[in-house]
Structures are given as structure tokens and as C-alpha cells.
Image: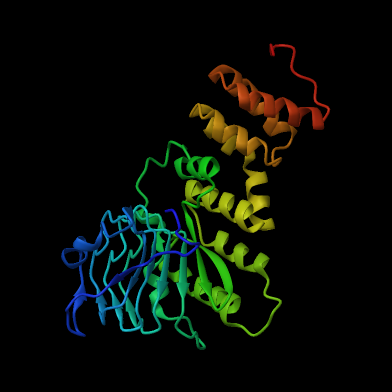
Length: 308
């Protein structure tokens, strides 16, 4: 969205509804194409005294950044679901209850928490993370689709950034089960609310990875934690599974994703030698070039059967 005079225009919602009104899709639809100087405004601040944001309130809306007022105390299930363009949500200080699956199938990258965090993290956190059992794909076919998208776009697919008072921690959108939410809750409190400046991000992300069992979900989360946060535990996991990950990209004939993964330098000699013939068979020129470059670093000789 272009700026005028280096200032960012914001949509200000001022509708004649009472303090107990509920923001729902029917009410908000008329604002979806709000314009300033002919351009769609996609940075939105709700200023009405809503106290509830209803389910699917922003279905397929154009909004990219959304600020919720302090009057809102409840977010219904699927409140921000299916808003593909939505990247950032700033929640108000009045939040008391959140439904499940708040950001389901949305493009949310960051959630800003403004309500003071006491000894425990509010139950609202439970609405941001789903169980791995809610992921639907063939588990016998490793495709790593979300990992591919992340490597190509650099935009997180399986994690989001939770920010509070200038501190941030990257959380997974899916974990094994809700029992592990206690682990996540303690980790979030330590990372965001503690007065101790030296919070171990390494420990935080190690705990996160331990809450996952689904391989495809874990690989995608590990990629994002390593590339975006520099997690050493995520790096170790990717290194240990590099051959399997690279094979999935190669079998899917995704030259871009495979070449970007190889360029991370996480593959050992065995993984490189395993992946190269598959990349050749599938005709992936960019990946082959990266694989050969990595093999040179190990001073590896190519098998005689390979024709490069």
C-alpha cells in the first residue's frame, strides 16, 4: 500500500453500535473496501466499543494489520479464520476469553499481546495453537508442502511471532496435544514476562520441538525456527533428517525448494550422495549445481555411474 507524505493511513471504524455490540462479518463487510485516495486501506483500527469479535468476522477480508480495542473481552472461535491477507493482530488489554482456532487458515505472522502478563499466561494462548491431530494429509506420503512454501517465500507457515512488551517468541501453530500447552505456557511466561534478561531461547525452542510428533509439521517448524530464529536445536533436527527432507523435495520435483534447502549447508556427505541421483532423475538443474558445490566442500568423488 503506497504511503502519502510518509504517513500510513488507517481505517477507523465508527459505526453506531452500543457497547455490548458484537463485531461480526455482517457488520464489517461494508468496511472491507475502505479507500483513501483511490487505494484500498489495509491497516485497520477498530475504535467502536465492541466487546465481542464474532466467528469468521474477517472472512476473506483485505485487512493486513488489525488492532483490537481494549473494550473487547471475548474472541469467538474462528474470529480471524480464513483472512488470507491478515499478517499482524494487536490485541487489546481487555481480553478475557478466546475461542479455539482463532487464526485457522489465515496468514497471520505476528500477534501482539498488550494485556499485562502476571504469574500465568492467560488462557487466550490456547486459542492460538491447535493439536497435530487436526492436520489433514496422507501421513504415508511425505510432501512437506508448507516447508516448500516457506523456503520459497520466506513467510512463516507453521509458526507465528508472539510479541509482548518488546520481547518476542516464535510459537508453533500445531503441537502434539493440549497437555503440552503447559510446557508452552511456562516457556512463554519465561520468555516474555520474566525480569531476567538472559532468557535461554535455545531451551525455549528445544521444548517446542519436543511437543511435536508429526514429522511434516516438525520439519516445517524446525525450518522456520532455524532460519528465522537461529535455533541450534532446530538446526540439529534438520541435519539429522536432511536426507529424508531433501528426498521429499526432490521426489516432488521442486527445484527451488530443494536448492534452497541444500544451500543451508545442513547435509552431510551421505545425504548429498543420496540426493544427487534423485535430483538428476527428476531433472532439477539448480539443485544439482548446489549439490555438486556442497560435495566439493567434502572433497567427494562422484560415483562412476553418474553422468554430470
